[in-house]
Length: 347
Ligand SMILES: [Zn+2]
Image 1 (cartoon, helix red, strand yellow):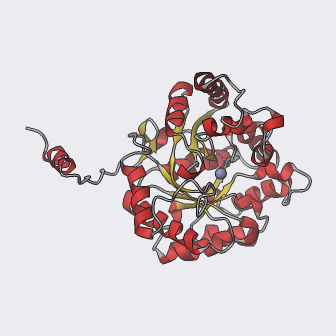
Image 2 (cartoon, protein in one colour; image 1 turned 60 degrees about the vertical axis):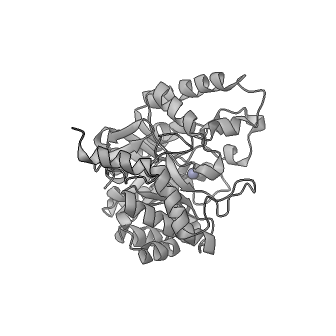
Image 3 (spheres, protein in one colour; image 1 turned 90 degrees about the vertical axis):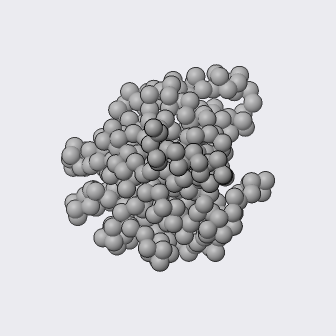
């Protein structure tokens, strides 16, 4: 006899009601299915791969078609795999060119785990032709839950993280809807939240007010691009409250007109570790993979600020530099392996 649970699930589907998915506690949701979080390995927690085909559409001469582009992308991603990376977290939601089938294909062919996101980058979407799936907290919550529990763009490929982009230091009314919906979807599904922040203007603090009003567990949130602030007071305030910090723009400090400097951003990582907060730091490089495959002359601003090492910046340049200034192998392991393991595991 069929188990009661599956019988009930199909009965519900037959009447158009979707049964809630059982949570896979301790598993991270990758594009190839749930994976024990202990198998994620070195994880780059904030990157962009899924918009590769969209970026390449701007360069019609390139690659001669999708098959060739996929082959080139896989070849590059295998180098990232060979550098010791196990998992890339893709933070490209529906409104900025996410191609979920591409992400699944390059994950399968490169051997790199990929975690896809739901969420939204801009409120409203920058492209006026892309409508928001809903303009209310409850409507947006349902959309995020659907992409986490059922799948993305008509596939069965599920999101394993929620990405929210907050542009300013104080969220707009629409951004606030996004933050509240993210907390509700996170609490309903057990997946974590990563937020694009303007750290130079202490945006994490005003985001936190809204998140906490919704009853967030701060351990389920990372404020990304945090190294854009060189202010230890800002960092310590957030980590002491339980939030994580994504230090993923360190390469931007290499440009002479960018502040804080590369050295200051790296020093802040070391100072936070010395203060006992290695468990609250992610290192990554927020690189746009498709843009990195474009020739220099057709890159726009966004691609030009990505590191010249591309997806290899963290492993080839940042980690060696951190070791040089005294960060231990054990702390590198905490930031690159242990923190992603606990953060991306569904609770
Ligand atoms: Zn990003």
